[in-house]
Length: 335
Image 1 (cartoon, rainbow, N blue to C red):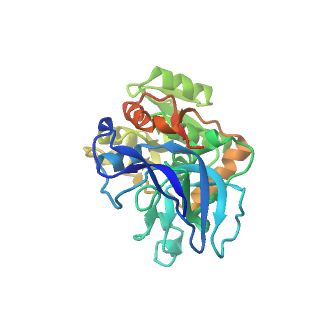
Image 2: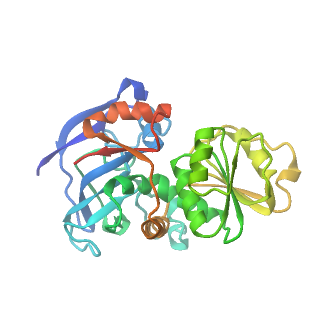
Image 3: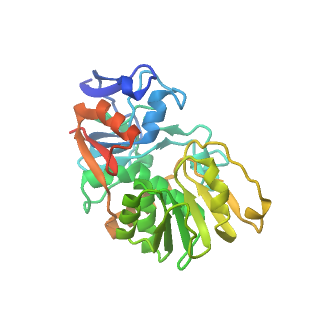
């Protein structure tokens, strides 16, 4: 068994203490049903920071984080179908699910109680090699670069699931509250599907970016929207914003909460949620989300805003990501 270089978490600690250590560790071997990727690049996600700092409990120690993984299939285990060595492939947050529980049987494998997640339950992509069950890997076409594809594996797919949860269609009005990489992918998908897009963000720079991406209207939280919304997605983890967004929804409208954590929610006026308005939270992703989004992304040539960094830069990049100092997404080149 060979060795590889990897960034390893031995104990949770604040990101500015640089708790990741670069080590030489055993290269993973694919068992039956698994593929191994030679990792070319891995994006940095805020969930990685939540795991490293202890906002999420540590499920494995030592742990290699990272779940926005793109690379080339290097080796396949017995019984793998659909992949062969030399093929481009990606690994996302969902690493596996049981396939037999009531959630898996009803197309809700994202809620499977025994689901395992990349870079949390199992080792992730801040390493030279990573393994995953072939059924949970994504085949990547040749239309986009590895740098473009890495951020699609998490903010892209998660954004697409949030969009699916809105349950709206052509001609409807969608509000995006907060505008970062995930919202930019939702905007591009919604625009391709003929949906009107209203972006609310305090940042004038982000308002301009959303306008260039095709938003129908942009403004800040103090401004009145020109129309009622059929659905909205909230990206910042700020519970105080919820009631104001509900007040902007049309009858039967739905608000999707995208963050993993959220400050307390309050609802002072029942009329803001009456008339079958609803709130739903986003939890994880399914393979359907991933495959549908990646197909759309390549067909539409969805644009990614990202900055690339070297493998040795990861600890400093983590600090930049936490501080909001990256223009778009951060991508670490492994190879």
